Image (cartoon, rainbow, N blue to C red; front, side, top):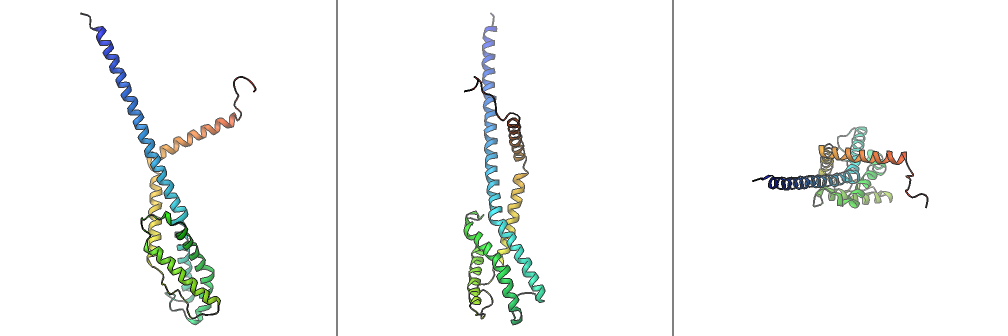
Length: 217
């Protein structure tokens, strides 16, 4: 009995099934890879936004304020600003109005207007304490403008946890940004994406007005 007629259809059927399985597996791998890269891209976009619009400005302003504060103490030969002596009052007011309060205003504005970018689910207490500290200084400086110098500092003290929080958050986000940018999957996606864009740009530059079939309209 000749079985070749039965074997060939069975072999063809198995080949078709294998082809379908491989095609589905390829589609699944492509879909999962694209999904993973999309999630990574969205996460990187959020990290960049937090750095550029919230923690970055807070960090720079805080570092500048700390450098300026230490420079003032060095000029006055003091280890800390308190107490503010009568002979230091004129210089203290100058630095407050031209350096410290402008930096405070920058940070207060960032915290109030960009609070949705905070990493934590709940507003950190040190940020609230900082805003309250700044508000207290605004009241003091309003008195200075009227010639009343009885108060020399904000009645609400500087929150020491504020600088620590800003530095740690900024460092953590920078580390996360670096990790996302240097992952193998992201580099591959970025390489392919940029290569395709460069090819498209080169094609358009060589032929900016592609010909149309059928002659002029």
